[in-house]
Length: 103
Image (cartoon, rainbow, N blue to C red; front, side):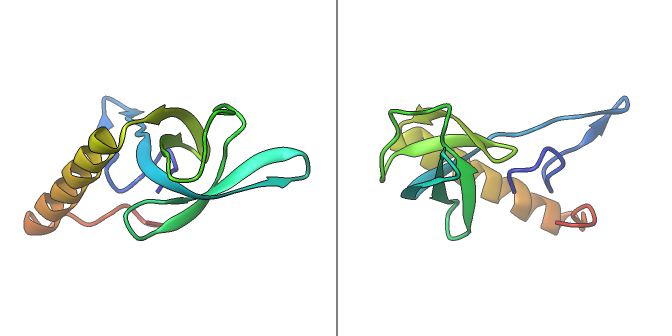
C-alpha cells in the first residue's frame, strides 16, 4: 500500500502519481539503529521507517510514502483521507476496474 505504484495510481502521459497514505502508529522500536514502527492503515498493519519524524509517538497519525513516515498529521485529516481512498476503491470496483498486478 505504501508503494509508489498502488492500486490508486493512474498512468498519465507515461507518468505515475504516487500517494502518501495516512496510518496510525501502533508500535515504535529500533532495528539496526533505525527508528521503525508498525503503522495501521485501517486494519492493515505495515512496518515503516520513522527516522524522519523523531517526534512521533504511539497513537499519532503519520503520512507514509514508500515505507517512510514523512510527517505527523491530525486524526481528522487522516480519517477523512482514508475514507476518500475507500470511496475511490469502491468506485473502481463499481466501474469494473481491476487493480494493477501485485496489489
